[in-house]
Image 1 (cartoon, rainbow, N blue to C red):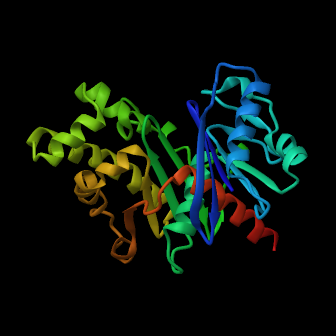
Image 2 (image 1 turned 60 degrees about the vertical axis):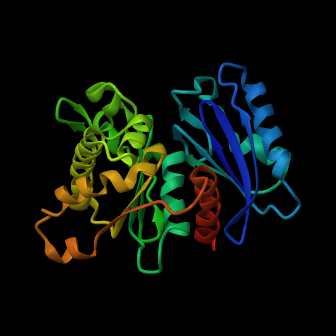
Length: 279
């Protein structure tokens, strides 16, 4: 089972043979008490839980300790200090795993979007913010408190990469939204297409840095903005096409996530990763 805890909703689903067969969502109620949020979490789990569930994976937008305690979470601050593993283990009696949601997405890219030859992957989620996760040699590189892959915090131009590689870019630099631009680009509007190309250039600069520092085989793009991937793909390629090592440049790929419900799939991939590592 995979569970995606967000600031506005909690989504849960069961995967059988890597296919999502059941899904349910509930409002997070981020302004409520811890007990109320846990109650909502259990409510959505119970809607999809069955006797065949072997493990529960949970993706959380924050910093997580290795024992499952949430150390820092900005959009649901009441959960700070809560250990989800202990709370759910007592109820469901199956292994529970918790990690940062962007890290889970990267694992989802490895298990559900990859091929046998791609063991080094970076997953980037583009939406309200910019999230990232790193898989090295088929295993998640979480870093301290699950904080690896926070590429959006890296300084870039007059701000950070998140300011130029998320919806913040469309709002602050062009006073519009990604959704409006997507509609315009579909209609062939030149301004919308130019803005997406500019966005791709900025994202390309981030990916160029990832190529230099991590040399992954591929970067997989997810999140709401990924629906517009065809419109900013060329902008990315214009930048990374200048990577000086042809041997790497020819094999490296940037692609869109090819699995639905990445939050649920990513959290379920956390289960696969932990179980495989344990074996």
